[in-house]
Image 1 (tube, rainbow, N blue to C red):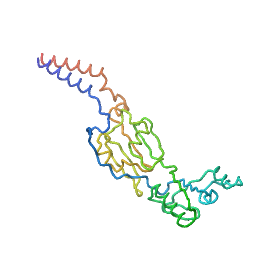
Image 2: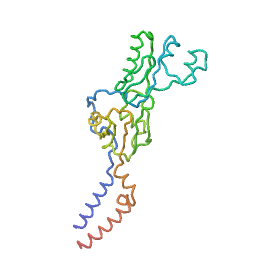
Image 3: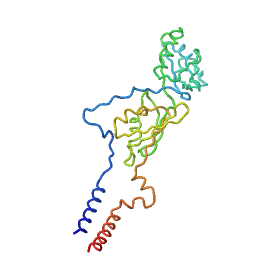
Image 4: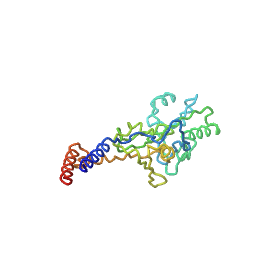
Length: 264
């Protein structure tokens, strides 16, 4: 009798364990109607080494042409307007002091500014200094990236093409986590003031996610999705032995035989 009780107890435990599915969803702590206060909205701010495209336009193309940086060989056309329309504008690289050299105006410190702030600053300078009264300034990021590594469907480098990028944007663009990705311990590596800082985020907890300093990404951030235990077992020899049905059938058979012998 004792042998049967022990046998069926072990069998029940094994069945329950094998049928338990891992939790793969996000925001598992949320209830209907629940809300969280988001961190202050953070836009991408320009850093030394960043590359920017800055284009100035006006009703007078010849005058606006003076404030752009076309490539060498731009004077193939006799018309300044046609030359500007057909040439490729080069980028500005922010120097270690956070500055760029802008035509006519000279050095401009753009480090720490957003795209909008740079746009308004240059436009105001052009108008206030009576250089271009109807100036239209367009600023875009060039060669700004974040990287997603580990257990996602499409790991790789992704460009930052707008002012606000969240970790959810990054996960979506990389095709979402695989079933082997650890959602409770996502790592974000970020360079800040010459040091490497690391943040851990639990995607299953909304409060942890939205309150994290790494919720809004910055240029050169690296997101690493760690593999879960199942993936780890599969990566080594015989790592999945203990989760194979044949193993448990043999183990149960051996255990039941021992129980019969012991309690006979």
